[in-house]
Image (cartoon, rainbow, N blue to C red):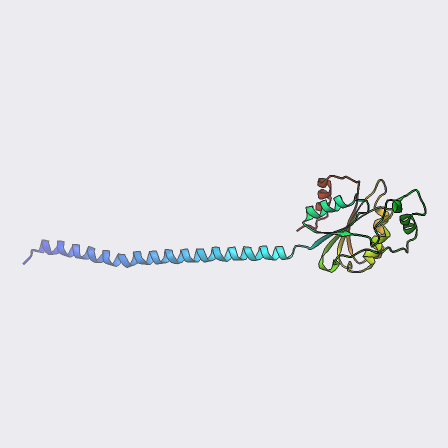
Length: 222
């Protein structure tokens, strides 16, 4: 037989043990809740990453398809066109005459030369060797020299061949002194339903950085 004092002491110990036992499931529940919260956070992060990836894909798919097409009979316009294409990450197409122009053809001082006769007749349409697939692009930059104040008649023929309607179009040229205004007005008449966004004259040998600044100002990059 135990004394009353010993009985009370024993009961207190047993009660404390029981309370400790009841607390253990509570600790386990806390761990489970933490695990669930961690899983939820991980799922949210994965979802956010997937959403960001989808957004990036959509943005990439929405980037405009850009072409720089250039006619450069003497080689002065070509470097400008190549610099523009590089700055934009665009495709480049060299426009060539079916019958290449010689130095004699481009003699400004002889009224009987080929280029002079062509430029003096607004209905002349020299043949081009091949045309780019304009339908594959959203934006087209057309480059050419200035001949007798206008774009070469070859360029007029190219634009009249089709595929430019509804495109966003910019024009650039090279010349010794003549501006691009006359050429730009004429080409706009040929494709009036294009979205003409800019025209710029460059001197031969213009630095690439200056060309890059101009194409950046057009706001057509990806």
